[in-house]
Amino acid sequence: MTTTAEIADFVTETAFDDLSEETVDELKKRILDSLGIAVGAMGEKPVEDVRATVEEMNGQGCTLWGGGTASPPDATMLNTAAVRYLDYMDSFLAPGETPHPSDNIAGLIAAGEYAGRSGEALLTAVGIAYEVQGELAWNAPVRDRGWDHVTHTVISAAAGGAKLLDLDREATRSALGIAGTAHNALRVTRTEGISEWKGLASANAARNGVYAAMLAKNDVEGPTNLFEGQKGWKHIISGDFEVDLSPVERVHDVMTKKFVAETYAQSAVEGIIELATQNHIDPNDVDSIHLDTFAGAKLIIGGGEGSRYDVETKAQADHSLPYMLAAALIDREMTNAQYDPERIRRDDVQELLRTVEVEADETLTDRFEAGEMPAIITVTMDDGTTHRIEKTDFEGHPNNSMSWEQIETKFGRMTKDRYDQPRRERIVETVLQLENHDVVDLVSLLD
Image (cartoon, rainbow, N blue to C red; front, side, top):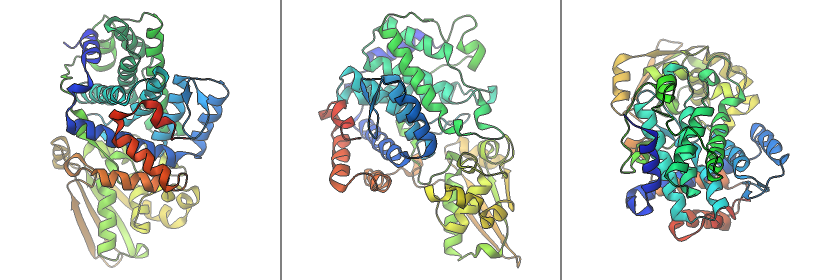
């Protein structure tokens, strides 16, 4: 039985030298990817609403990306909101849960800046957070029990925060206990009518994780038997589980998004763009679109947790397979532009999305659980002609992972409207050589 003490031991005992060269390289990719996405989200209304809330607190100690300062928890809230809001972040592909480990990064950068830590310390903490979140997702999924995946995030963020704040074993147990006892999130965030909270919930979780670590730093005692205690996390939230936290390697199972779309849509979106392009499909001549997919995709974005045909907002659109497939077929792309309110409301996509049928297939579910992300798409034309494509995965899947050059290209695309080329190059180089820098060297480039 995994105990809170065992996780605290992993946090306190893991050092930078325990990370392989390949793992460090993957962690750097995740950091650069997250920074680029966050810059691309600056100016989006929900993110700016969070900024207005944070700025009311007049906090100090950490950098708000895009300008200003705040306390570590408040900086975590805003900066994580920017990383997460566009739905362009990374994902860990467990059979029963799909969290976004990059939800931890902004909070750990804030904790590292506050504590004056090195780039090596930041990389170690990010590796710890990815490992904790990945192991919980794989061995203790909570989605089917009615809990949101950010229930894992608050624990992983507390673990990474405890590392950066240099907490000892007992204080780390308290940080984990405070985080996991007080902050468990309901799945209703992602069911039925989806609100903007869907894109902000993980920022709240990361903030609470960092705050829990700061409370423990200042000697606040929390339950030290979070997982195994009577009426504890295993009893109420997850059921019994075992994790294997060493070595740090779960980051290698994390995907990078190629498209601005929900995780489980990536293969299907890539497939329908390829199909439409190769066959010169005229959207006006399409009778229907049929997608065979795995059970998780049907559940989350295909109609298993509420209708996905009533699409009026970005939050609804990026969690609707009918919308994403229709928009991708018409526009031959899936970027921020496809979530512009005017684009969402246009008759062409609203009419086409209602022809989309999403069906779960047991064989494809088995293939997903074996490590693929399969999708079979059939487009039927008005004259009865059919076009079909089958995808095993997509560019960015762990089986087809992005290179450093591809991550850098994505970063450049997301940041070019805010930073000039010299600034972009300095950020890239700082992340690439992060073990030779302090955290403050990185955040100083993010105004």
